[in-house]
Image (cartoon, rainbow, N blue to C red; front, side, top):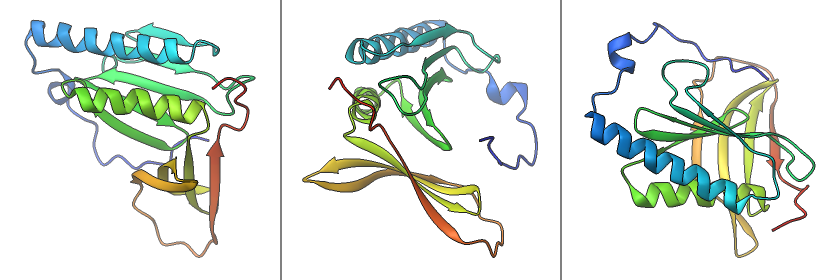
Length: 172
């Protein structure tokens, strides 16, 4: 499903360029690579792809874990502008590369999604996702830990909920 985001203006090239020193930038790339290594190690039973400088000038690294036998959905993590962005379906969440707690939370989020200890709950109007919630399983109850959404346009379409969860996991 393609995103239906409305961009009022294209970001300027200056806005996209990093304001970090070369040493800070190299340090962040090293942190991102170590984070990717931790994720691929924890998910060794899954096929993963790491690309350097994928797609556009804005992305320095991209880790893709495609939908496959033991994963019911695709996970993408992009490193750009000193942060990691986790993308599943319409959900995206940003983790700072300068904050060790954020890095650990990124790894934990991915591992929990793969091992069915986390899921994505999407709220739709018609076929359009208007809200996505990352939920973790705590004491046999799903708790929302992160939420993203779009500005809802007026709609008379019925609101529905869709759960994206890895029920294919055979390795945990």
